[in-house]
Image (cartoon, rainbow, N blue to C red):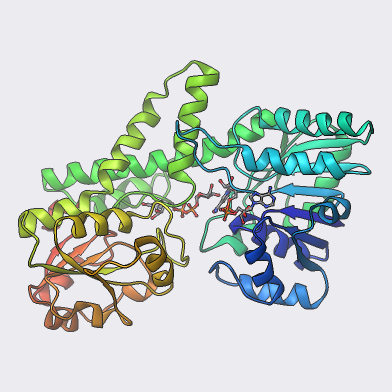
Length: 444
Ligand SMILES: NC(=O)c1ccc[n+]([C@@H]2O[C@H](COP(=O)([O-])OP(=O)(O)OC[C@H]3O[C@@H](n4cnc5c(N)ncnc54)[C@H](O)[C@@H]3O)[C@@H](O)[C@H]2O)c1
Ligand SMILES: O=c1ccn([C@@H]2O[C@H](COP(=O)(O)OP(=O)(O)O[C@H]3O[C@H](CO)[C@@H](O)[C@H](O)[C@H]3O)[C@@H](O)[C@H]2O)c(=O)[nH]1
């Protein structure tokens, strides 16, 4: 099938590459000429495990191409995926300018039947807006071309994006006509393994499903974080509580980890956008989501609070080692990463920071710019020399089983503050480290 993907970010590039990998002829377009040039030259604009190999393989096979030529991109694909950003507007609602610009371009140049598939995360009603914009352009041109509108939200997780796309739990398709539904069934047949994973519904329900999923997951995390803070006060250990409740299949073990707050490009923005849609279009104040946001805002500052509780407010003469800058492991993405809040707070309090991350240090340099008190270490252990504490923000695999004695020997004061509850408190303490984690009162 001939497919165009508009936007070559995390979602567009992964979708385009995976769709090419099962034999489709995919053309990816982006307005960012630098990104397209990099891709054309064989480079990768993002770090995502396994993606580089798939891109290379399909470019070599001639099934995956990159362009900035809008007209050519609209002419190419019967299916036009819109996978551009929907960043938060000032009031927290999703900014639709990129989605609507992509739609306008399709209206400007379409010359046959097109299925316009929205993969970006967009508020309920965006499908109607996309339809109107394309129709308007066709009226301007004085031409009639058939097109269908489909909502096909993406559920991939960064760091595991290729696997999520190739082996999805579900494929949500919101559509209003059989022709489009049949095309989507054919397109997704290779990704459905042994049983049907496509859930077909109307466009509005599909649009809301995406926000509902992210809001539910964010709620789970904020709930666990709040419970962790309570456990700490009451002398209970949130890790035992997690195991105790996760065993109930109605609750389940997934996504139940307390930590230093959720970050990334999706949860923070999507929870805000859903609240705003509820307010403006639904006339409803989402009380649960208000609490989810407030709890997360507080949780992102919990590592700094623990640092101050241990070392006092005057951090002028202190140095801290920070392990993990990306908002989660296996990505270099630092959007809304808890590390940003911690490092800003530490620097603001006059402390020195020496940071290490397996892949996100270049991105961190871009985010923080030059700062005399912020340095980067080339290995996890070298970040520790002379530091007053090691603070762990992201649970990269290489941090899972460190040599605690080596950590203790390098630190000026033997303190380990763990924002992801990676270790057995007894084991850490047995090596002479003061272990401060999240919600581990019972083990304190
Ligand atoms: N990142 C994720 O894990 C993830 C997962 C599921 C859904 N989403 C949603 O998917 C959408 C895209 O997210 P992302 O993280 O891939 O964004 P991104 O910012 O990484 O990439 C968006 C790309 O779109 C390009 N673009 C903007 N306007 C364009 C236009 N008119 N024509 C062509 N290209 C254009 C930008 O230059 C950029 O390269 C968002 O709505 C997001 O909420 C993201
Ligand atoms: O038990 C948990 C699980 C996650 N997190 C944090 O939650 C954030 C988000 O993690 P994750 O969901 O794994 O990453 P994303 O790549 O942001 O993926 C989410 O956002 C995407 C964009 O909408 C969706 O497609 C995915 O389904 C959804 O999981 C990260 O900061 C994690 O550290 C926790 O604190 N505790």
